Length: 332
Ligand code: NAD
Image (cartoon, rainbow, N blue to C red; front, side):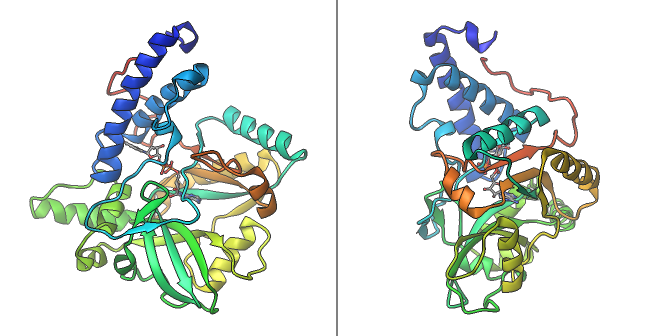
């Protein structure tokens, strides 16, 4: 039945059940790197919980998955505190919702804005800290505040520079992913050895990065795209587009597909272009990301407890099935 037909008591009970299910799926996904269900199934259940909590704000609990960044820290790794939290990202699944996002932004800042549009790489977020141009620490997102120190594992990835082209002290963030070919080879090897295969490249990348034996990580052929400068030193950067150009100049691997879009027509064009090429790309993408290009406007817009207000992911429909089949029933 529609959320509006629920009594508060019914909504609260349904939310508790949904949170339990989502917490279990999150643990399988983030901690065990072995998802129980496909992303679109998780996303649909998350949406149901969000709708319930929006309709009945009194049932929201601070530990609800809608109020925190999913993810956990494995014991065995040293913990790293992220001074600037590594947040999650809001997502939308239709062009109407993307239009609403744009309208919200325009209302908030009082005028139309340009967006830097990027591919949403299907991997996991990493943070890299450089002091005077030297890599000193690399970590996972973890729960957003505390991540895992995986410096040695990240040092095995050839696209991550040990030394930058300038002696700057900065923190950068980006995505670590497993290329499609490396994923196919890895699963082939796993099968030959009679070992479990990985569900998808994202989980294979996460499992490969969080290895206590650095040699295993090295053999897994991981790669990176870096897209965020989170502390700037004295770099003269005013937009997200410039940030990516600067990252490239510093020696990072950046994704060449970023495009500044001045209106939604240009955004639709970008979506059409890359949705069509999705299968031909050598890495997995699960959508595109719209980021307010002006960094000053970004900080003016700020963030909620979980997501920045200045960016949004538009997720592509699931690859195998165009219609969402709910494999698992839940109560809403
Ligand atoms: P998310 O992965 O949907 O989006 C945020 C992340 O996008 C960032 O942390 C970053 O790592 C990544 N990203 C990729 N390209 C980027 C770019 N160009 N710019 C900025 N960021 C970029 O959000 P999340 O909180 O990490 O995870 C939630 C999602 O994980 C869910 O929507 C669901 O699809 C999936 N999930 C699935 C299961 C399951 O059981 N299948 C369980 C939990 C979560």
